[in-house]
Image 1 (cartoon, rainbow, N blue to C red):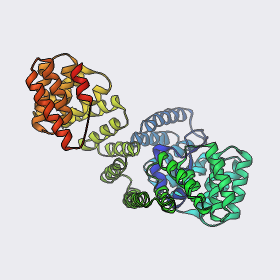
Image 2: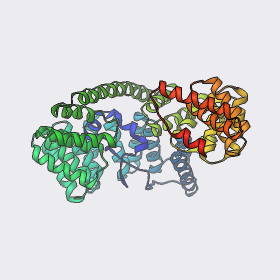
Image 3: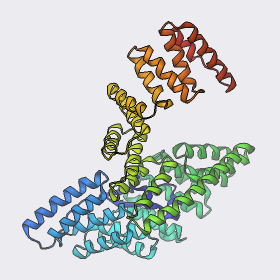
Image 4: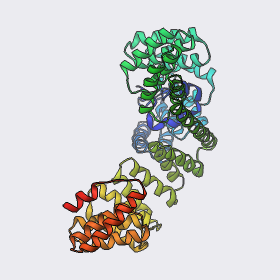
Length: 485
């Protein structure tokens, strides 16, 4: 089965930086697990191996890569001649960015079954990540000899040849890809980039417009389209394309570079400076991320390096990738409550509240608790509308830190929801002891006082809210609406 490189593994492709940067996205492809090729082995061993492969695939699907590798290892012991075992092991090594291990596993799989297309394709993809381009090209060519309709191979090879300046070879691969899949936006994107490199701008425009017509969700295509518009002296249209690119992917740094140029050419100097400043910040962050990826690549089982990579992803808002790295860090160091806790936080960021609560419960069992942990558990419970459970977690958080502003504010909301405005008022008061300028807490306190019949105190809080908002340059009609309820 052919597929574009999965989003959850996006970080694996960053070593092949030139191609990815040029594509503006994650277009390098690997094949997903599938198939089963065997050499001579016992029937009992084969049955046991296949069972362990299924276990490993299930574990890998849940992100438990180390455990999956153990299952595949058992399968290899039961049936050492089963090529698909080593294929799955290769994919697991890829997931861990252990490229030498992946090469060894895929090579062994192919020595057992040279017709295993997916193993050969993923071996080629691994060589690309190692920047071993000649070997990658050779393996991709072998894939096409085995499967002349393997689309991701045509795309990967065309991209490599384009980056190496071998335009004729890239053109042949694009043409063949379009013969097989004439409606595939991938090939129009790489064709547009090829025409851009050849300075055939009108043809580049035609190809890229077709690409975004077929797939209007690819940020890199719009960034290339903006660049072509500038080459054709169409800066206003370049601004539109550049902004569309950023709306699709706010971290695609080259979009800001071309947009900065487009803004300058339409006379929007302030916007141009802002776009170029954003480009510089992203460039610095990417350099830091690249260094950390190399560290992980050199030692894929370094739990501290994994956690550091996860933090960088989280800082960039790439929570799915951060979650994957924290999950591996936890597998490598199961007793680390810090890694496990951050894994839970990433689940919260992704809206996966049940999974977050499960992880946080494990942290509690390991004996590492504080107010912030219980507060986060309370918020996750609130998102699942488990109000009683949320209240229990928040009360426990308040026990550990009496004047925690956010804990008390959340408790106040829950007490108010239950109609207990006395307890709500006390909670909001505690929140304000911890954070006197907490405007939302003062608003709710004013309402709670009013519900309790404490009119003068309510008026006092209203005045304080108005003064705070005035000092902050804020006007808000929310409080007035709430007071009328």
